[in-house]
Length: 107
Image (tube, rainbow, N blue to C red):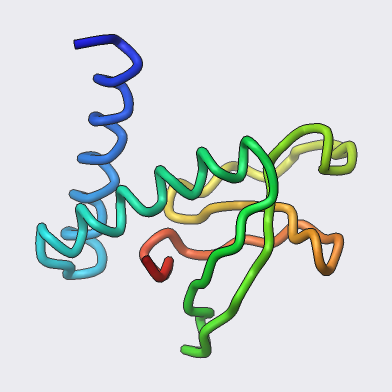
C-alpha cells in the first residue's frame, strides 16, 4: 500500500472517529461523511466545486468554493489557529473566505 493511500485512509478514519465521538454519528454515517469531506477537499484543490452543507441555524446552503491557489486572493497574516472540525474555503460567488462544520456536509 502506498504512503499516500495510507495517509488518506488514516485521515478518513480519524475524521470518522471524530464524528462518532463528537456528533453521535453511527460508524457507517461517519465514514460516509468523512469520505465526502476528503473528496470535496480534493475537488476544491483542483478547481471550483459545488457542494451543500447545513449552516449552524439549520438551513441548507448551496456553495461554490475553491482552494486552488490561482483562484483565491492572497491572504494576509494567518493569526488564527486552524480548527480541525471546520473546512475553510473561498466562496467564488461572494468572493469571501467562508467555513462550515465538517459534520454538516451533505453527501
